[in-house]
Image (cartoon, rainbow, N blue to C red; front, side):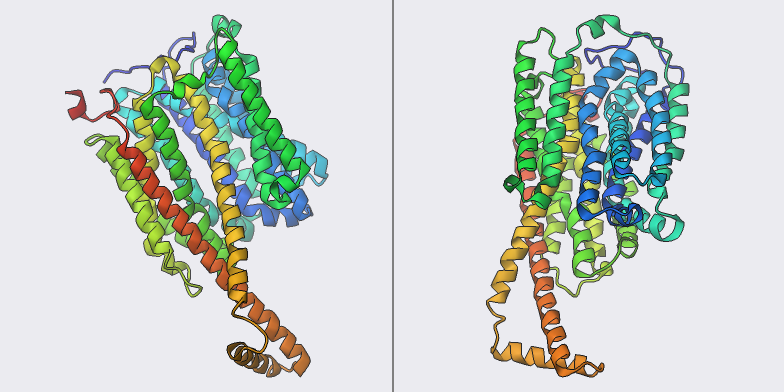
Length: 530
């Protein structure tokens, strides 16, 4: 079996590694660290606020400071790895990351806590972006599909397994392990990188052509937009000067980046890399994937925590056993299929699974318990295992090798900003629909209505039996009735969310129907190359 490399327009100048599999293992570990970290922090934030003694607003800014810096640096990492070598880009940031996450749980000063989380986010932004390029540069062609599938697997697996891990750490081991788990893995990642990558010189010719302005403008602009979206729901969007300033300022920087790429002699990430029909269609389809996959990563956990009133440790078991672990089988099935059929067909199966799962979600009622979501979780696992893997293989099959580094920069935009926009839009949709349903249900819950009087009478009687006086019992009964209205409004809003996920899957299927066959190559089935 021979090893082939893809020229990406930014070649390193060192000797080949004698242990390429170790280098690939290192970057895949880094990808898992970053994905787990973002998921664990989001789910564990309420517990972290309590441990650090933070207000709700302080916790919200801590979350933004932990993730926004990733997008500041992530788009440039593949280029930096090509210029300075993977060893320089990965080893020292890994060790600095270990020191940072070990210290954070002991800090109580809020400003220092923000600064450390900013550094932590910046370092996380290093770990994922080089993965695709390293897989294609270091693995034999026959292993490319497996390497890219592993990259795809970590995204879906960490989204579901993270819920269970948060509960385990907080309840059983200690909340500090939300940070410390990464320290162990990051040390291993640094060791694998050191052993698996060559000692490379700096590509000074390429560095002399560096588009530093373009990298800074895109990273800073997208980081500001991310921060604005992350704070949007809390601060009521454009009613807040902070959110308005972040989004408009970020947009201005991104516009300046586009102008910069049009005028500099050697653009770092020219948008023309996206002008291919198949590439642009795949990126649009990936956006629909990010929306429809929220049925699993957001809607199911939201229902079980908001409506059923469960904690992560009570929810995580179902998602781990029936959504995360089955991904081992579904991703393996995706690899088998991708060697035999067009990647578009694999993605079609995935979107069809998501559509079925979302349709199942529209049947949810307030009586559903975690076990009622098992059939849906299994179908969603099929969707997650097939969809992203199929789309990733298809888009890489369509890349112009000389412009691969530029495309990887835009993949990071999809990974962070577009996912955040999709999640923020769904959060806003759920909030608005809950308010609408509360108002509509409230129209039928009015004082003097016979059904309302009977319901209040029954609830009041129950509270009186527990030694409450009549006035207190009536007040508690009224509060209970209002909570029942909110519960049903939340259920209806989540059903509306599943409907959005269903139609996103349908749009994804339509976009796939517009794609042309990928050119024959190492990632296309054998029949396409004959």
